Image 1: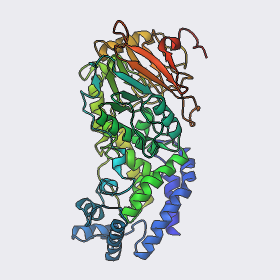
Image 2: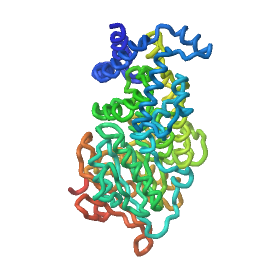
Image 3: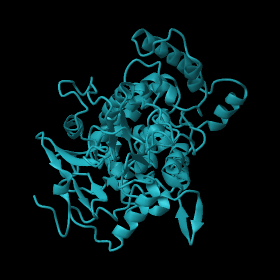
Image 4: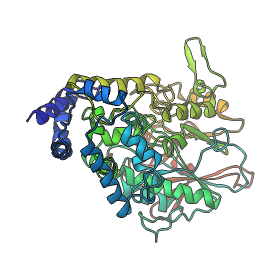
Length: 506
């Protein structure tokens, strides 16, 4: 009864550190799922004569100082037996305990990544691994061969069906291949996905697995599939999950959380997240499970040929070289610097040490630890990933995309985008962005702003997927050929999607 009371207190009082008090209701709704996992740990703790929340922290600390493992010898033996069983069942490919496994079992401060690392047989981190992104090279490709094909599509939001439709329409996924075993058929095509794979859907991890698999195949074929950060990737990295679907959270539990529980032999690692979606948070936080192999190879923005791609938009100040303050305005430092800032932040565990054994004396300690974890992530987040609704951030701004399917309402929008394109590169002619749902892909501001988020996810508005295609210097006078590809197999001339006044023709 005490254990249930404590966990109920965590769920009620331990709301997400950055959210208002109404988030308590959300945590209450999550209690059932968390309690199920917690009771498994409670039953295990009975067999090892050790409670879920340690009320003997001084004893544990003194044991550690004396060189003894704070867990009982019975529990440590149980974990070792479990590891041997897991190896026999194919969970691990090695025949002996690796140094990472030993460290994780013996050190409560160790990263959790070894429990999902390369030596695991199924659902391991390599499925999410993107090809290494070389900052300053892969994110800045102004010089392309004549006729180079470039495609781009917008927000996915956890809808695997919509994602597959995007990829087939773009001509880069073999339509005969499956989601589980996809086949890249795009050759040397360069594809840019402009962010927001996360939230609002039930298949977020499946979407990332599909994209990462194709990205690796594209790299081998001489092409590329580049993934950009969206504001929802930033939110998840900061421990803010108010836009996550219950089905999406369950996907993280099945794919990530259950495996860590099993491999670690305990679910106490969850307590350091205070009931705030531990599997999701552990995956996307800086220094987390997916930080090095996936998030660290994603980009804030990239220049490909005569086009700059970004999730929400770019200002001249985002792209100006150097880092300084000009009349009170922050200068970010170019596409390359934006991407470098994002990478340095996401691969570093800013919160310090983990507490994988869940050694807390009180509920207040649990909540305080989680609050610090979230606060330090937000405090250290670079400006290019930060902001919020209405902010002039590369992942949040709507200066060039609102209202949808019409010319921007901001009277200075054309002036802003001209200045931004001039800073992006010598011959950059257009900016491609997602973020703000449109009914169809369209261009505004004299074709300088292409808006490609069509709200395709069922969690947004269930729009019809479309893909932007650019053939570099494909025209008679070496101009780019810009088209829109539809699911029906049509190639629509980009000039037909220009917005002039109130709306485009439907």
